[in-house]
Image (cartoon, one colour):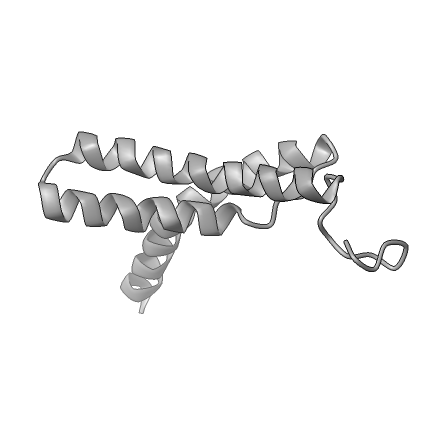
Length: 99
């Protein structure tokens, strides 16, 4: 039983490390007054893209570069959306129903 618990704890720490990095980054972002709920999606898109590129080309460097470009493109889309709305708060609140 103790081996099972140790294994589960090890897997949890290994799988959760990347989410901890995103969480720490989001904490700093929220302290500046900006809420970004898309961090996990950005990371997932980068990871899927990196896997697909590495699988088809066999190049880890190319996979990393393409993952960075995809992540940057997703961020730019969020910036354009935010600029088009004219505010940095995209979360609907009772004071601002439309977000």
